[in-house]
Length: 443
Image 1 (cartoon, rainbow, N blue to C red):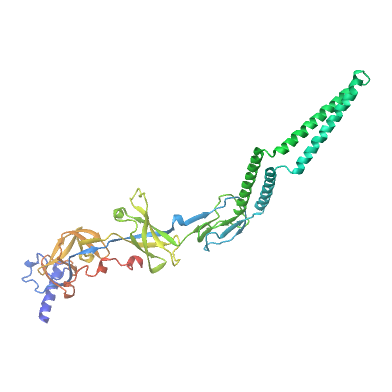
Image 2 (cartoon, rainbow, N blue to C red; image 1 turned 180 degrees about the vertical axis):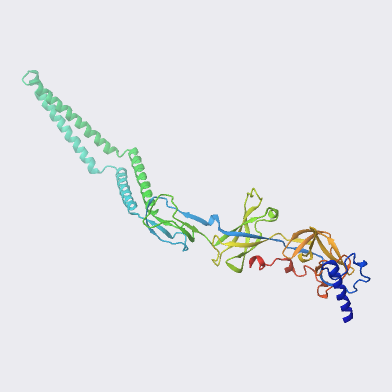
């Protein structure tokens, strides 16, 4: 045994000297310099090519952003002086919690004035609907009788002085003065009679309608005043975390000026850029395993929620948004993260370990073991994972390819497959075809 190993070692050393480092077999052309070839085959590691399910993935780099529908900018609907800012950055609030308070004294005065106006209009409408009181009608009747008596008295006075006037015993001026008093008495009698008839007829419907309209206007002004007062207390429209505060106590702000930002961080988006070559394989709902640079070793599971409808004009790449739950409240907008997007599985494909592929002048090749000898074969490759690569041409199911020890072996060199790997399939363990999330990308 020792002698045989010595002869093999001598042969390998000679081969190395003549080929510049090739080991295991005499390279082509060396037969002219040596009389014999090594008799012992070179030990190699190899696997058998089989159909398997390939689970490809894409490594991505992204940034955490707030979901647009979970973010709000709190702004006032009125202009005014800020009396109190009730929150600070980083504090959590619930929907309806007070966040900013305006000085409401002027608004409260407007409410009081509007309430008084409503009370006045209600009283007027009630009086019109009620109609005149019996006492008012009786007073009108008395006024009518009084005016009738005054008219009769003036007529009697005219009847008494008319003969004297005709006899020129009284002046023309005295007679005209009495006539003027009669006309005034008759006018007062007509007014009293019309007033009595009006009271007896009741309130006209148009007056009631006008009073109702005035009351409705007063009530709407009251609602506006109350709303203006309520708007002095600004409440959070959503439950979330205060991320930015612009308001300052004592400052005057205009209507619609931003006061603070509130974001619901219960779930966030990881915004990533999907290369155009993968777009046809990426669909909403695809799983993405995400690692955070700030929490080494911790992996979160998310899903592709949205894909941008517009591609980058320069590269053709598109933005995608991966939804990540934030139950532990560890995620914050702006954090950098890395993700592994799992593409659709490819069942029943020929695949070999990545380590089995070598490069020969730009052409991918593998070393195949046939009848105990190594042969270099050109192959056409397809989809690649972390550990496996698809072979679309050049190999058949059942071929044995070298994964270790086959680099630089001349064609036809005898080899010996190590016993521990001779019957091993490249995908005997399903985990071998699935990229581990604890790979280098997440360290």
